[in-house]
Length: 359
Image (spheres, helix red, strand yellow):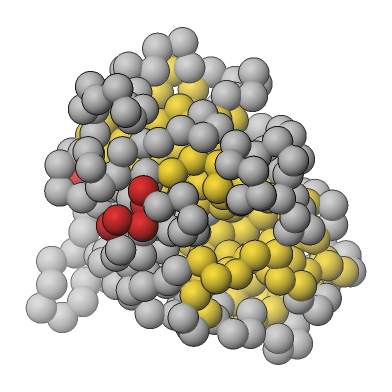
């Protein structure tokens, strides 16, 4: 792990709600391409302000107390966004083998330690490191492996990690191109895993001495819990249906036997499904009233009311580009992470960025 240093890359905070409606800089057209329309805050979506910009293929946001940390997939960098509006490189994670959809992916913070999910040569794994120092001068301690041997590939790596209300670490894994592994409870691919913070297996896991919590997943990339402890997950489908699932311990969600709502009693159906061109869901956050889902190909934030899981509304459609993550900040604000520089987007000047919902 390289030592900390300043990147020289500026990250800006908006100064007022009034200026937030025009918080994005002018688009600079690339030779031979049409400029994308400038993002705006529609009345339907609500106003936003730019928290940070100039990020390179960012993947996840996590908070160390009130300090935001961001992972960059291809460069394997951990950045902190300080109060002066600057992005500072905390560390570069050693051993990351970026390629395709793999690289430095999910982040989580627990008891003063930073957990990282990343693609290494031949596998995905989770490590933890002590967070040291004060905001503006954070450092990472030496790594400890929490879990390894998760199958990796050029795509379908899963990668989201989060601590549940039970204090356990939950990990989403993709099928890594091996479809049948999702139905194999002895495989770590195509699963949601549940382990202790130090890496042990909880005694109440559904399959004995196994980290598997649920299975039959293709490529889940968003997890979250409501106030009652109900767990939700967003999942990429193949060609037909993307999914929002309510996760049950030991549940089988059907992939690759079924995709979307199948009405097959062997599997748990999603509570909602969408076509991939309007969705491709990644990060997920749960507020007091709704589930928010960041969509990549669909370029929109989807909101599902907790009181009616069969309905949803769409916000920012086409305004911000590809959306990778959405999180609830310590102050209750909603932060959205764009992902237009990941090789599949159409970046405009200033991308990628974090925006914050106003109001």
